[in-house]
Image (cartoon, rainbow, N blue to C red; front, side, top):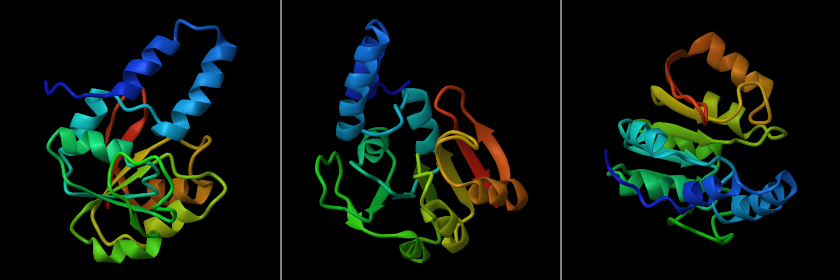
Length: 169
């Protein structure tokens, strides 16, 4: 197995030993510096198999940075590409930008709940594979997004823990 340098996962493991209030306080700071979702090596290695990828809503680019460590290729897009910190170069992009990436796998990591970004991305994306990382009908992506995946896409793989799921359409 490829050994990834993944400081977020390491810090997250350390947090488990702290009182819950301290975990929450630290987690908020870690989300700002890294990502909403904490990637495991297992998830990164699985996602890398679907490279090349285009990640919409890249945030800091942390997941893309890890995917590149594992040998994958990722183009990062975000509506605020210059907001620090950055682990990876991020380009200005929104769901409509996805038409430029018909051969890539779409990566959506923790898309916002109260925003249509994931729905528009799903309807704009021309590729055949989507990797969704987030809670199923929980605190990520709108219900329409989940409905559309259920109706028009096929779940081909799911990983435990972080709930990455891989869909083909």
